[in-house]
Image (cartoon, rainbow, N blue to C red; front, side, top):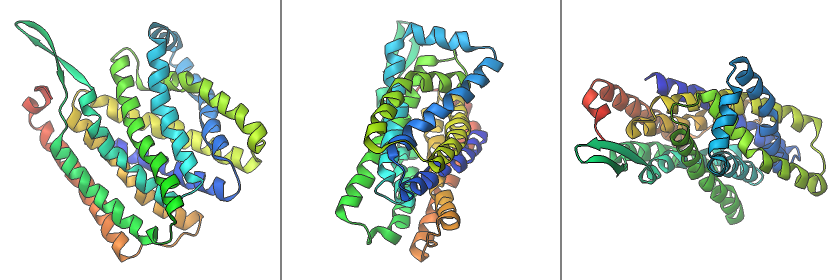
Length: 323
């Protein structure tokens, strides 16, 4: 239950990303700066945290052990996650991007077969592929149905081009984020804590953000002071606070795929916070009656996931048996 609470709290800070990214695009800012500046701003803050905790050398040592894997999965988990999201914000409203992003709930469940668990038997060690958690998938479809109803409010106003460029990149991001996160948890194991892992992934993805920044200068010019301020806020709230909270929650349940799916499903609450934030800051209209039904379905899905995790905590055998 604590992990689900952390996931919902992370969603509050993640929601700021969708609201401010859309705000920057409406003000004429480029998605390239919105994406690259977030991670460039994150580096010094994460570095300070790691230095204070006196475990920087451990991060560097782990990266040196498997530099290629660190680069690949950091690229998947951070670059293929955030660059498409900011690009989609150039063409779609925050509610559309945040709503489509909820595909990550299903994405996290569907990538499960890409991972293995080691079982110790009399014959020796056996690697067994994880199974898709069908119950978690069914509950998550309730949440996705709620998200779909929310999107119906403005779907009629969208052109085919807006739907394509505003949705397809987000679908890519929705599979890349859980895949990269889970692969890095598997790679790090118990060798690094959450702060170290976030810092290591940010550091490993840094070359791409620097390249994107250099490409943005001759293409769209330098960012405005307003975009610098807003990306700084996004870097702190979403990049540092939200990412750390979410990674702590997923790391605590990383050995149980069912609980992991439930924690990842908490990201659906972002839609609720984005609707509220856009209404207050960007004067977006409030949800209609159909959208409110969608909101109720999202809340119902989160309650069902929470109840399922609570029941699993009462059954130790469910925790220890192979998935």
